[in-house]
Amino acid sequence: MTKKLYIETVGCQMNVLDSELVVASLRKHDYELTDSTTDADTILFNTCSVRQHAEDKIYSALGRLKNAKKSNPNKIIGVLGCMAQKDQRLIFQRAPFVDLIVGPGQLHQVPDLIKEVEAGAGQQLEVSLGRKEGSRDQIERSHESFDPLRDPAMRPTPFQAYVRIQIGCDKFCTYCIVPSVRGPEQSRPPFQILSEAQQLADEGCKEIILLGQTVNSYRFRDGEQETRLSDLLYSLHEIDGIERIKFITNYPKDMTDDLLEAVRDLPKCSKYLHVPIQTASNRLLERMKRGYTVEEYLVMMDRIREWLPEVAVTSDFIVGFCGETEEDFQLTCDLVREQRFKNSFIFKYSERPGTKGAEHYPDDVPDEVKRRRNNELLAIQNTISEEDNQRFLGQEVEVLVEGPSKASLKSDANNDSQQVQLTGRTMCDRIVVFDGNRRQIGQTLPVKIYDASIHTLFGLVVTQHVGPELFSLRT
Ligand code: SAH
Ligand code: SF4
Ligand code: F3S
Image 1: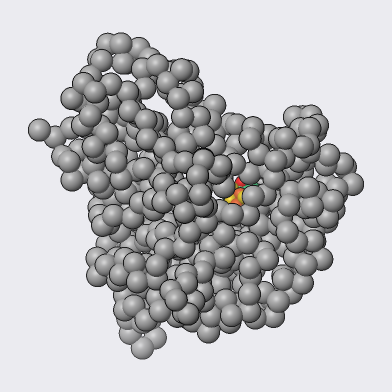
Image 2: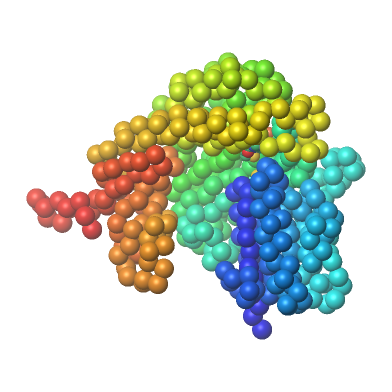
């Protein structure tokens, strides 16, 4: 009999991919998705620990399920992902009605663990070894990359797919929990990545987005032979059917010339690079142990622009890190004004117990100051993003159509009309919204831009010539 699965995902693209794969594996065990926790036989939360807020969200969602479990004790509730790895048994203490806790390195076990619970075996906990709980080799093996066969039906759109090329992280930025919950940095063997990409292309996938916490640190050694991200890009580029290749997230120190050269020379590579700087204060960069100075980051930006004059660069920032003064913050504002990133993701520092940051430096910037700095920096970035988008007015861009826009999904929930507002992205990762027809989903179309806001370009599909003189902009 078919069972119903409700799954909620927070966190980064790694988690989105993990959830996609967990759902695909449960579909093989006769599960189908539901968006109601009431109807669900199994409720899973795929969690994130990068900031306190992400954890609070999950604990309060769990709190709301307490009664659901009381009225239906057969409902299975599971906590997966980074918070499962970080909090482990603590989750059973805070939410005793949870049935399973599964770390990111054990996701392949989820179907079996659910069966154990169904069979009456009680609460299940499967997590990886901590960073000090064994030899590097043992710890690496306990963090297993979860990359089973793909299921096109489970992707956000069948035309795009995340492909994991690396798991874990060894950079140990002092504020960050990721190295301890995702384990040591490990690069997947190139043949696995290539065969997965080939399978995706055979299924009609046009865009692949390679994932790694520091994706450009990718290195796979096989005897004498070393494969770098640039080598991988050349091989992936050969795959027929794949039209676009992106990769996130880059680590500034590993932005080597061979990679920039590959991105320049390979037409399928998106001219879009996400390379977070985090702060423009050298004193704080040092405290964060990011491994570069502002000056070095700027030299890297110059190199990026030399190799790729049309590139779109985005960054992450943490405001209110321990000891951040107004002067430090102003340095960051100045850098954002000068570098004119396409977009910036700005976060208020959230102390993570167990990190070096929490151990050595007091979280001494008051929350209201963090909030103000966050808003101020965001306002600067928003002005730049909007100005940057204005440059596209009147231009024609190539859009890979992803599906109905968010607005049309809201207003047309029950409307199956063919004419809808569609959304897609340009080669350099800009979001474009335009009116079109459902059959255009998955196509790559020329769109002429007539309006632009901070995050979105608005356009009209350029149709082909229909006669010697007649040229229409609208479908
Ligand atoms: N691996 C990626 C990012 C992982 S986390 C990288 O190194 O760039 C995504 C972003 O969250 C980080 O870039 C950082 O800006 C932010 N972040 C990480 N830990 C944080 C913390 N403790 N508080 C606030 N923001 C944090
Ligand atoms: Fe965290 Fe730094 Fe690793 Fe990114 S590089 S995941 S910020 S430790
Ligand atoms: Fe969060 Fe884990 Fe990603 S902590 S940001 S979901 S790797």
